[in-house]
Image: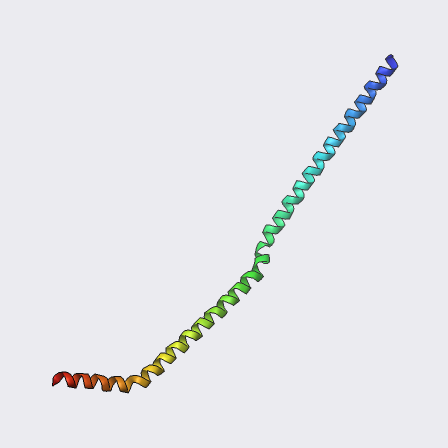
Amino acid sequence: MEQALKRLLDAEARAEAIIEAANQERERLVNEALQAARQAEAQFEARREEIRAPFLREAEARAEQAIAELTRKAEERARSLREQAAKHEDAAIAAALALLLDARL
């Protein structure tokens, strides 16, 4: 009986040692995973501007195109208004003179 009890205590001690080793291995793996995650995050943060740069360049190019298009349309509209004003200038002067002359009578 004493021999069986001794074997059980030895088995229990070995089991506890295995459990402790497994806990330490788990802790080591968790710490390694956390370190790897922190390192990946630091690398991402270091490269964030590099990653964003192409998107920003594309957005700026689109904005410049939109500005150029709006500027072209505004200039075209201003030119059209100047042409219309020039076409109707003589008629407007004649109408204004007629109105002034009729008002005097």
